Structure formats: structure tokens, C-alpha cells
Length: 196
Image 1 (cartoon, rainbow, N blue to C red):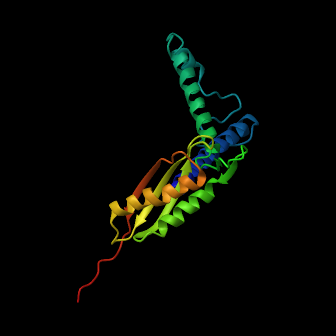
Image 2 (image 1 turned 180 degrees about the horizontal axis):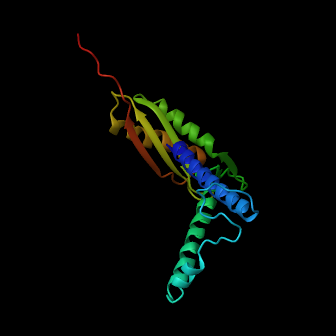
């Protein structure tokens, strides 16, 4: 699910960039005096976004231009926020572990996620598990898990085993004071069995 959301986000960003690039290219072409498609609203180098009549029509309204500038500023800030959000990592890269020597050690976040997934999948009744560590490496990280259950699995017992065993072992092995977790259980689809 995380990969799908990331893919949709990147596709939307690429599409918006492509539209802006094409529009900018056509504006540059018009400014340089090159021919542009007939459907393009501006065909000459002296055409403007707002005609003189449009500009004078709103001249008497004191609220119009401040509202336009504020709306464009908000759009710019939202675009910059979205751009910066693309570079932010959702996944925790590493966890700091107290090694007892005062130096500390670093454990890769992906390694801890793999251990959580494998120990959960080893449990009877679990078909597949996905783990994601979030948070900051200097503070206690949190885990988000998705567990796909076999048709015969008991959700309550499986949830208790994941919390009491897999998460407890990960917390103890990394020397963390706590490891809060959000665990989502989902049942695997299966065909109805035929009775003869």
C-alpha cells in the first residue's frame, strides 16, 4: 500500500511538471515569435494574460489584487511544501542502540523490520506480514504492521502473539524502552470448498 501511494504521488508530480513545462515552452515560443497551435489563447509576443480592459475593470475594487496575490502565495507555499515532502523519508533508516560502552551502536531500520516480518510470518495462521518503522532514531521508534491471516487463524490469538513475542523480542534486542505499534489484521481470500 505504501508503494502504491508513493507511485501515485510521483506520477501526479511528474504529470504536473510535464504540464507546466509544456505551457512554459509554448509561452517561450510565442515570445520568440514562433508559430503556435491555433487553439492557444495567446498568439503574439505582445499578448498578455489580462487585457487592459480586464485590468481596469477590477481597478476600483480594493480587495481584488490583494486576494489574487494572497491566493497565488498560498498556491506557491503549498507547492513548495509538497515538493519538500517528496524528499522526506517515511521509513526509519536506523535505530540507535545502547551497547553499554557509552558509544552506542546503529541497527539498520530495514534489518529490524525484516526480523519483525519473519518472526510474525513464522507464527501459525499468518500468511504474510509487512513492517514499517517510523519516527526518529534518537527517540523511541514506532512500528506499523500489516498482517495477512490464513482463513483458519484466530485474530485475537494472533494479535496477542505478535504483540507479546515479535514486538517484544524486537524491543528487547534493540534495547528500546518501548516500541509502540499499530497492527492491522486482514484475512486472506480463499475459495469456497466444495462438499461432495
